[in-house]
Every structure is written in C-alpha cells, then in structure tokens.
Image (tube, rainbow, N blue to C red; front, side, top):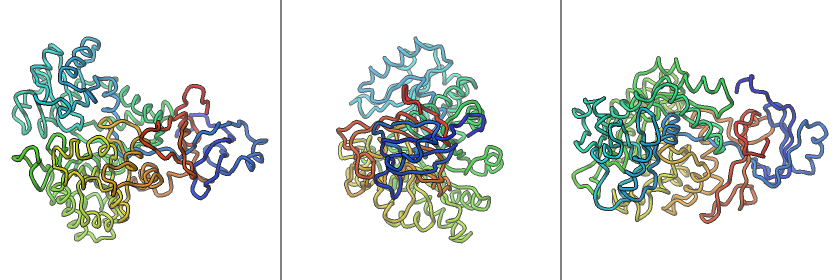
Length: 523
C-alpha cells in the first residue's frame, strides 16, 4: 500500500468477535500504524485504551482476515457490471428484452452481455445472431454464456471481425466457441477504449473491497484480457487504496512479459480445455446429452511439460485451466514428465497451480499432493450447477457429476486449496463460496466452516507463494474485514446455515488503510 495514503497511528477495536488462531474468545484488537500489536479480550483491552488515538466499539461485529479471491478477471468483472446482466434470466424473450432495453440506454461502442444460460429456457436452444440484431439494430454486440466459454455475436461485430467465419467453433447462427470465441472476445475488446477499460478495472477493485476481499489474483491471458491491464491496475492503485493484486498471464513462453509486468506466473487461464456448460471441456467419455461430443483440448501433454519446465527454470509458477477429466489427464502427464526431467524437488519448489480441477480422481489428487500443485477452485460452481437436477448432471449424467469438485478428498490428501469466484462467471461473494463448500451437493466432499474459510484466506496467499499471510495475530499486517453477521460458532465464524443471511461487510482494511467503509462504519 502506498505511503501516500495516510495511516492511523494507534487504533483499538473492542466489543466484537475477533477470529484469530488460538484465541477463541478474543473480542478486541489493537493496531499501531499498519501492524496488529495485540489481540485479546475486552478486559485486557482497557490497558490499551488510554494510549489509543481512536477507540471503536464494534457492537458485536465479527473481525476476520480479509478474503483472497484466487481467480478473478478484473476488466471483465467491471464491464459485466456496466453491461447487460443476463444472469438468472428465465426465458429467451426476457434475455432479448434486456438486450434491447440496454441498447437504447447506452452509447457504449459495444453492447456487452454476460451470464445467459439456455438450460433454463426449455426447448429452443440459444439466442441467435438474427435475434440479437433485432434487439440491438446495427450495434456491435457480444453476449457471453454464463461460463464464459461461448457467446453469441451480432452481425455488426462480425463485420469488424469477418475472420470468425473461418475459425473452429463458428456457427452461422452467431454462436462462437473455441478459436472463434477467443477471436470474438478480442474483437469486442478492441471496441472498449482505454478509459472505459480503466474504469471497469477500478469498479471491480472497489467491488472486491466492498465484499471484504483484500487481495485478488488477476487471471489474464491473450484471449480474454490485455497485458496493458497490469499497468492500468498499477496506476489505479497509485491513485487510491484498493485490494492487493497478484498478477498472472496465461501465455506459453511469455517470460519477458511476465518479468516486465511483475507477474507471479504464466498461469491461470492458459486453457487445456473449455467448460462443461458449453460442452468444450475435454471428456474421456461423451457428453450424456450430446453423444457425438467429448469437448476439446487446446494443449497436449508435451506442451504442458515444456511450459512447466520453462517456468520452473525461471522461478515462475506455471498453471493451467483444467476442467474435464481428459484435460486433467493431459495436465497430469505433463507434470509427471516435467518432474522426470527436472526432479520432483524442483517442480514441487516452484509451487505450480491448476485452475478449476473439477474432475480429478484419487490418483490425480495424489499427484497434485506429491508435486505441491495448488488447486484454485470455485465452490460456487457446485452451488450453481452441481446436484442431480442441475447442469452438470444434465451434461454428464448423475454418476460423473456426483464425483466432481472433490474438495474434501483434496484437502485430506494435502492438496492446497485456494478458493475463488472466476468473476464475472460467479459474483465476488466470498462468504457464498465458503457456504458452497460447506454445503457441497455431494455430502462426502463438504468442508468444515473453518477449513473452507482457510481456503478462501490463507489458501489464496499460499497459492501465490506466500505462506505467512491470511490470519490475524500480533505482528501481522493490519489487514482485516469487519462483518455484520448472525449465527456464529464458538470460534467466531458464522455457521452459514442456508436460511440465514450471509455476513455483510462493513469495512475492509489493508495494511491499516480502509479501502472500504459502509456508510456510518468509519473504520
């Protein structure tokens, strides 16, 4: 955090519930400058009150370490908030009505929509290019499916990128996936000017702060963002206090770019495959609802090996987007080959990562544990699409769907879990992610509240190579969030019953500087 932002000198918080390791009855916390100096109970806090410049009565609020969201797309998150929201839309007509209303109300150079899900709409399939053209006449439009791995484009956008019709994944009705989708997203991005893009990133960082998130992992890649976004993030953070950002760029061999932009790794959305909803995730067996499809792979095991070897030798994290079981097989083979070439110790020491890891068996889990590979996972995916009557079961059948997202099995084997949202695919809502892991639709894979919370705090730091952050203790940075909550356990964390509202963030503080204050909180 820049020294340009003024820090408070001595602050005492008391009368709350402080979640700190080994201190189950802590109610108060003392802070000097940017460092926690003491945590204890209110009786002992009286000793610190005379010397405090400010004393804040928490009125029973919960204080926790800030969350880390280990998989975020900042520009897309901000653009999705600015664009037309299609999440949860129940019918095709409603989706098109929203597009039409948005088109009338904005003069943005492109109509951006996110979140449509045709599985909610019954018979009839997806919206088409002709329908989008009627809803937004003459306007370039890019409307992404909820998983972000396919979209529908308008004729006006196609005119600006006519090569789409020559690429794998193009459909004459305007549906794009695979190579055509990647190119369509680039074409849409070109219509988003620098100022609009900077505003989107700033809005996303502010939204993260409002959600109690103290750090995000920005998952960039050529097919979904721009290298210049890293400079935009740096410029924004120089102007105002924001959550921290750990940068990743998903491009093989881009070592110079990683060094120039301070990237922790060439990892993240370096895609081995696509998504289940778009039927582009690579499967060993055909999709249950499309017997002629098994998805697609974009990288093979040799490319995986070469990338892991190159990153390991340069002290960078390697990492890949992996969802289907055939994609995981390619990742596993590449990791084994890299370990055979460099030695297990070298690969383990580099602390590589995989994103999503939704379909992994016991053998694969053991490999991740043996090679120290973190699993950056999204519990909200299971909440949205898991269960016998949801998308995963429709696409794959109940048996395969029931084995997905094995959080408890990975944790038991010693695989480091880092929770994230993949925003804008699912919202910046960390307590919802914790609850999704606690209420996993496969009961055997449920985590305790404590374990799930750790995966969304310490787990995110560890996935970025930092083992000394993510909890509250004397001597630690004053990086914490304050919550208005309801049901809490003896250790201070909410029990997260499905029928109880999730905690509301009232303040987010990073290194002693408030990056978010709910009106009236004044922390």
